[in-house]
Image (cartoon, rainbow, N blue to C red; front, side, top):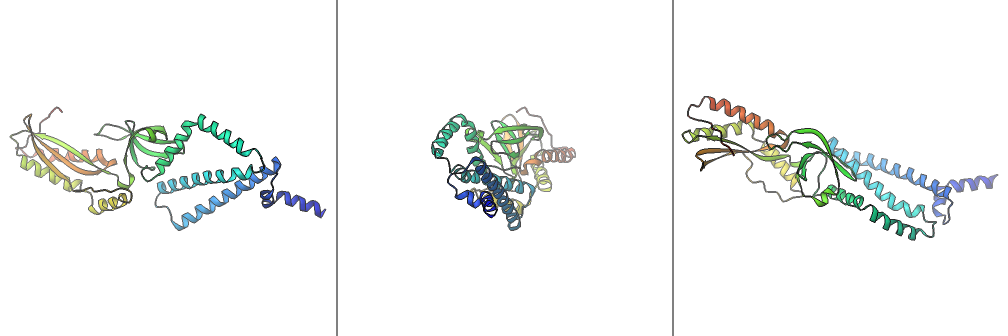
Amino acid sequence: MGEDFKEFYSDLNPFHLLKMNDRAISQSLLLFLYLVIFAVLVYKITMVMVEKIRPSIDPAHDYNRRKVIRTGFLISFTIIYLPVIFSSLSLLPTVLGLAGAGIVISLKEVWLNMVGWFMIMGSNGFKVGDRIEIDNIKGDVVNIGFFKFTLLEVSTDPKAEQSTNRLIHFPNYNIVIHRFFIVSDTMDFVWDEFKISISLDSDWERAEFLCAQILNEELVLAPELVDEKIRELSKNYLVRLGKTTPIVYTSYEQDGYILLSLRYLTPIRSKRLNRILISREILKKFKNESNIHLIQVKR
């Protein structure tokens, strides 16, 4: 009875199974179950430790971190476990070689998607929350998978740039074959210009003064906010933003009118709202100015 129990215990002992050179299929399956349980426990413990050492600053950061760690564990344990599980097969190198060659040829797009995923997760890629434009489609990144990423489409109309509420899925290999433009969540503001035209007999100096007043009262970004975001972006890029305060450019156009260009920094998602604020303030202030005449110019 004691010998039978010892043999039974030996068959269930994972360390004994690892040392065996010639395992039965049932023993290989049992060992695989042990390894899966071990991998899950290591992953859970790692996530708890990471959360205690470096708590997530926001849901997007937590989402990205969990996805990267989970994928890293999956790849690592797959690479480590395959030789262990099939160590008793004498033809393992030949089987893996032939299988690998067939997989590489038949799943070319899958491997390109994996390459694209590594590019996305790299320092020059993007993350959930960023706004990107790729293949003439613009949108906010709402999900990044191992084989595809998803955008919440944004209208390409430069005067609006608001969500169309359509989800667009891109295979990751698009990052490899297409150029893409990023407005990072790290530095989510862009330069915008609001242009108005006035007649030559208008008091352009007064109009310029009023426009500058509107920009500085309504749309100026806090300098410390801009500096903080530039410092964050400078960790991966050499960024010199230069002048960050709003400015009004006045120019004489050959078609016979004066053009005022209001240039200012705006958060990308507030672009339309700021244009509305500027329009309303210009209409209010110019309404009481008898010597300023707005005109419509076809561009």
